Amino acid sequence: MSLMQQLNAKALRMGVPLSVHLDITYRCNERCEHCYLDHDDHGEMTTAEIRALLGDLAQANVFFLVLSGGEPLVRRDCFEIIEYARTLGFNVKLKTNAVLVREKEARRLRELGVEQVQISVYSHRPEVHDAITKLPGSLKRTIAGIRLMREAGLKVTLANVLMRSNSRDGDGVRELAADVGAHYTLDPTITPMMDGNTSVLRLRLPADELRAVFNDPSLVGDAESFCAPPPPVDDGIREGLPCSAGHTACYVSPYGDLYPCVQFPLACGNVRKQKFLDIWQKSPQLAEVRSIRGKDLTTCSSCTHLGTCTRCPGLAYMEGNMRGPSSADCEKSFVRTGIPTAGMLARASGANPVHRPAPGLVQIQTL
Amino acid sequence: MNEIYIARSTAVASRVLDGEIVIMSAVDSTLFSLSEVATVIWQAADGRTPLSEIVRSRICAEFDVAPDAAYRDAEAFIDDLARHGILRVSSAPISSDEPQVAAMAASIPVRTA
Image (cartoon, rainbow over all chains, first blue to last red; front, side, top):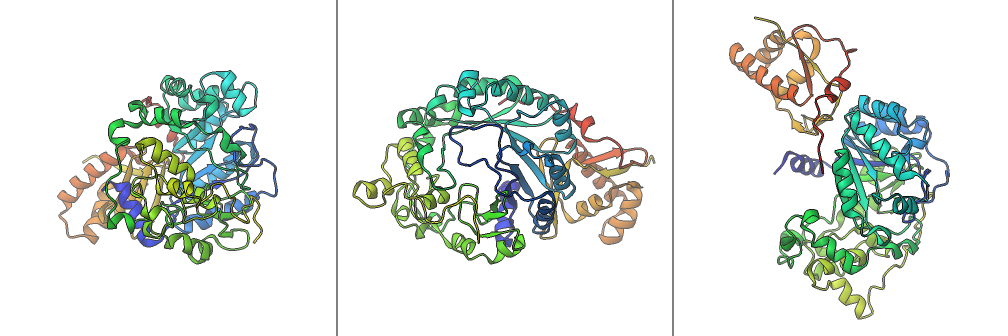
């Protein structure tokens, strides 16, 4: 077991929220076509509120802090927030589009000891990237920001969301990452909007192109093993946890709403009204999320893919049932192995209709 | 014997979990979990107290270990953490105002995907 796995196991045993994703704003200087957020400011937490929250997170032993948005650098106090987080000993990872990063910002991020910066790049071609972000010149500015951050000594990861409009550009972005000395990650997941609107799902990669991704050894390693039929489901899998959401990780929105994960908009409390640790320890919603084991899943518990599926409980929740299947993950499992999932078979028989937004799915949650 | 001074780098993240200190270097993302003895050294690394004094007054006072062996083990531990940018080591007292991250950045290899 690696040290990181030991750390996660210890956090799970102790009920410690090891990792928190905090969006400090939903405002953004880009308007990406697949984005799940609305970008108006509906009353973000103030600097003082965020400082108080960070103090509470440190007290709760949160170690990994992901600061994101929207575009976090549109907040004038972004560096003050990062600096305060670092004085509290967090490992800070920043997600940004780097459009606002100049030499001064790159140097400051490095001085503050930000461990890693993740930047969304959709294509190596400006006409494709800029069409997705709807910000003319954005790729040029993003790449300039990336180079400045690399020169400052920051570790940078290019996150490449693949969808219909950029499906052919994965290799180009990977080459760009190598050129600037950055890591590369690929994600073919498009999620519904936070208000339950599923219109952005039309942008998802078609099955044949997803299949090509899953069979590309340069992306998945041993493609034969990656696409192999799942191993038999055993008791360890049936008793297993779906993912870390709500167990060792959670998400806090710019308005103070606490969710199990950024992709799991189940309102569990608001840090403006309750202490973070009170919500983490006493929220009935989190208790329900934590109670779910593989064997409890309504359709997936009988699925041959149970042990290997990337099933996201948040996506399942957005389809109406956090214990149900996530159709996007059913599709991935099927495309990867050629074996239909229990969720697909249930849908074919008329059960489990997809994309029913869960009731009360709102971006600004009033409790 | 030449004195050695050690100071905790500010380019790290750290937490105490279940009595153990967990540290991650922002320089190379290496994760460390410190033993009891290492934790004492880490907490005593203020840049002003010589290592020999830390070993004598903290390690030997709190643990059943011979001074020479304790000092050798402490040196090896310090070398390891210093390589990952987690501790700063000097032959003179270390001021907390000295630049840290910028100096380390120059030694970071450029990684490709």
